[in-house]
Image 1 (tube, helix red, strand yellow):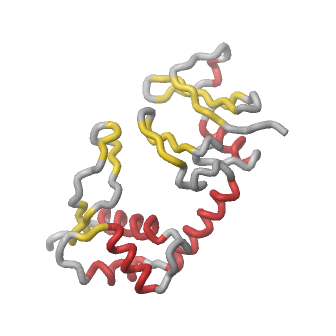
Image 2 (cartoon, rainbow, N blue to C red):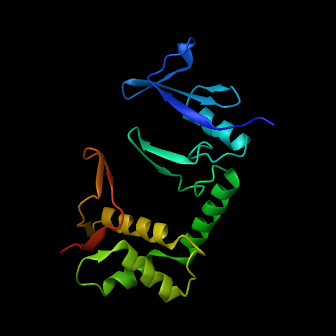
Image 3 (cartoon, rainbow, N blue to C red):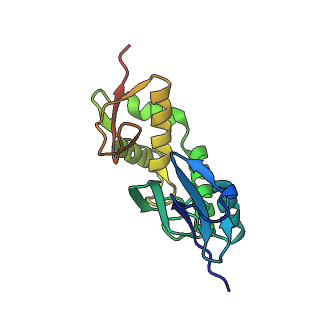
Length: 182
């Protein structure tokens, strides 16, 4: 049985440079432990899916957010396997159905001071009677809050916890929002 874990090589120029993709000033090529060279991210994801590896971390168990920052893969819970990724995706789709935007609006309507993501997620979980760990409540609530922010209903008032690549890539662990003033 062949091992399959795909890694991206940066600034490497292999002999067959025709298959490379120029990315932010450096070449990137994907290589699998089985020996297969993959020309781009789409080919790497397809190979990962065909070999039952997570298509986010490509089987490595680690998400490389930017070249200098990585974290355990959130799509497959750090397993590197496609099955765990699919289970998470199904749970997220269920959370989308169970947690509509109106519920989050109702919860945040009572807040007059800035509120944290975790505070809203815990309140939504309690309001809907959802057991901890059953659905990805936090990620769903985060996405709704970001949507309300994009629509101008909320303002993000937190400073980033880390600036990974200047102001273009910032990490917020438990951000604060407040209602936009009318």
